[in-house]
Image (cartoon, rainbow, N blue to C red):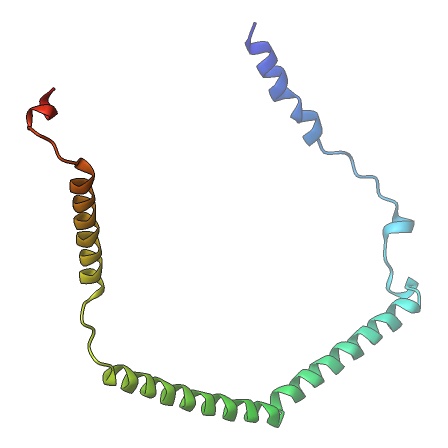
Length: 136
């Protein structure tokens, strides 16, 4: 009984996949070279002229001396970048060495926190007469 709905679900997509017969209408769908309207070739010629013009503009931009100026600017910026890197290295070399490393600084901060917590615990304990109070 349970297999019947499963088979029905599998069979449903089959009619959707079926191929419809193609009916041709030769008078409307066939394209003949002499039957084109005069506007279509004119439009294609305009598009061709526009694309040729864009291609020529792009070729002119590639050959433009502005690119040479950009290359000179890039070379100048590269030299300036190298000079700034050298200055940074010199400034780092002239710095006095740090007293403590970062790891040592964190270690000291933790030790200081533990010491402060121990002292606060001792002060907050108050004065006790005997150790037996802890056991009770």
